[in-house]
Length: 137
Ligand code: TYC
Picture 1 (cartoon, rainbow, N blue to C red):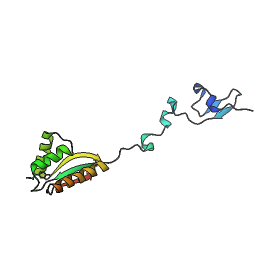
Picture 2 (cartoon, protein in one colour):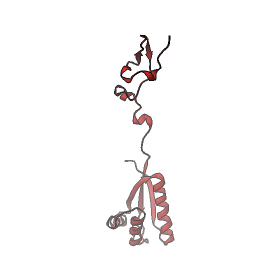
Picture 3 (tube, rainbow, N blue to C red):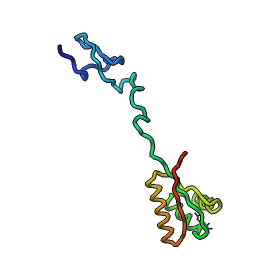
Picture 4 (tube, rainbow, N blue to C red):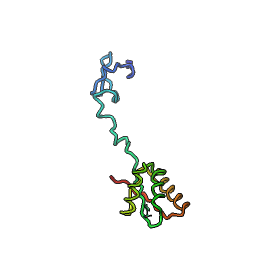
């Protein structure tokens, strides 16, 4: 007895029961066809495929008494790509409240921004501090 190979069975002949009937009248079990609409719920879900987004990190500026307001604004414009007016608002928030959000990024980008801020600040003689923390929201 010869069996027809699965790939020669027309799609409409496939049955969702998991079997199909050959011309010889024999039921043969087949693997699920994930492209059949009846099987869409059987295809691995996003969580099974682990397509979660990488964790994000908040980069924050801290206040101090010595870094000039102009330098902080320059950092926010150049490193964090803020507009002049957004940079002024963030700088004033840090000045008044002690801390302010500069942006939210994947780990490596956040880390590079923190390092760049520290490097530029030290180069210019300022004690400006910048930190990152995991964004839990
Ligand atoms: N407090 C500083 C001053 O009065 C300005 C300042 C703002 C410094 C924000 C740091 O992250 C900072 N010159």
